[in-house]
Image (cartoon, rainbow, N blue to C red; front, side):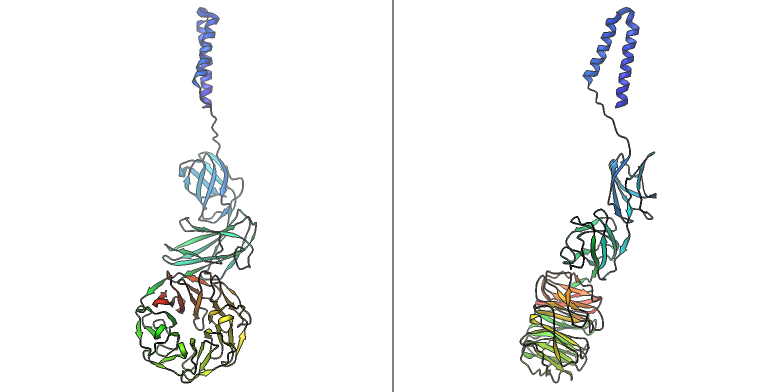
Length: 532
């Protein structure tokens, strides 16, 4: 527009002078004045707009200030080409791919081989360079089902980046621990962004995943990016982050509507479940089909323990003890008590322990023919679950925070559980590592790693349910607990716990795993689920 205006003024001036030269002899001074006045009148009445266009190519800002190879960076500026291919973008000299373009914004992918340094944009023969350097961050892979790894935030403009490999159709739980509602072990307050391999944001969250893991349902086999950034204006601090894979759970047809409380699986194919009014169920094909067995009693059964596919013992109301030698016929045993029996664990064909109400602990060393009542020091407390690592080392948990332990299979002493809440479930992976759950909402259990000398808080990553009974696979660190709202919490290493996605809303009373890749849960109204 500036050039057009100048041209008009020049033409007008020449026109005026030409007219004066050609007509001066005929018209004199008055003719020149008339022509010049006419030209000025023309300018005044046409209102010609005047604008000066800035054609300089500029990078004003880019975001984020740091990232990793494969993720998007947005560059803001002026006079970029609207044609994607006409913008040549480089990260410290390494050519990048432009995916979106407008005159004032470019979206580009951090290229393979990029290093920290300035970003440049070239359009035609013009090049602009960023005023500040872009930082290429390290990408740290997360090990599936491992415990928290620690990170440190730097400032409000830079982020920490992690990656995880996901399988299509699987459910994962991401957790992070920070200063907001966390364990108290970390100082940062962070936000987390999860980005899939197509560079689409799956979620952004500022609530601590320490309290409640964030579910990721994978729709493709891919690597995801996890961006951890400062929140609340803190300049620096520490945080922890981890990711866990859930088994995929399916509801199974148990053929019963009775509440189920006890389950035992002597091998991956064979499981028994017991419940109200003498209910006994059995499967020999990993839960696909269940058959009801006659227990010979109508009293509620609360627990079962099997040492092989044919030999099991079950306990229940009013001192009931039943045994099968062949996996189908159940016979009553003399228990020497009328207290309600709540839990049983058998170590071999001969040795079993039972716990129940009013501090009851029973032991047999002849396969259930004779039962000896043991002094428990539990008073009138109900002992809800008993667990043993071997024939001599056992723990039992109950009401009012009661935990008892034996080192010789006969003398029981009180262990400081660190709580007065009722302990609903207890399980041990070895003589040092044991875990318990509590019958309280919005709460977690506790863990000991020194054989019960002391217990510390145990976070399951799911706090909206009441946890109940659970079990550990003998000789391994694979443990599981069940709870209300279809809750299953699981660990394969004893230290990193995470919920499993069950899609069940009812109450689960117990759970057991036959391996890291197969677990069962049972509950009210005949609920049976299997995770693989």
